[in-house]
Amino acid sequence: MPGLHASSIAGTCAAAHFNSSGRPAITTRMTGLPVATEAQARAAAEALRAQGAANALVTLGARGVMAATAAGTHHYPAPVVDAVDTTGAGDAFVGAFAAALAEGRDLAGAIALGQGAAALSVTRPGTQPSLPRRAELSV
Image 1: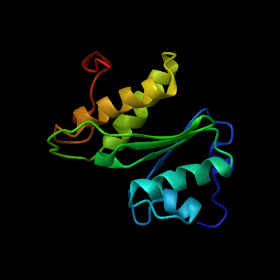
Image 2: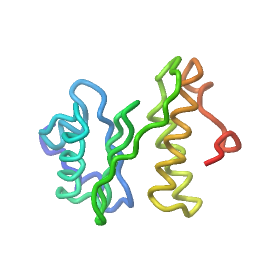
Image 3: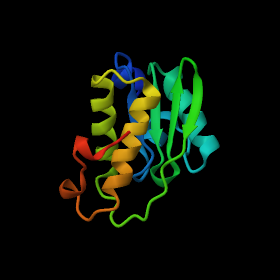
């Protein structure tokens, strides 16, 4: 995607989320790097930070989240669940992640809440009906 750069999207954000799914993934289009493995996702997240994102999150679906911050890069494994329908899992993650930041949680706490929401959402059919309510998330 010509001209697409993390600094133009996320330079002023506390955290930027880049989905690793799609054809080709937005992360790959922005960095030129594949994200098929944990090591590749780590390199891509770090490349996004180098482009200007304060914090870069690369979601990897059932494989978790790679987060690159000023403190370093860390992989957060996803909770293991029996998935029924993965449609909307990224939306569940981002919504809960943003809510957690608004509640004053740190990045790790926000990722945990996002992952909990995504994990719960994939155990239910549908997109909107599968999105959990805040009270359902104990994290």
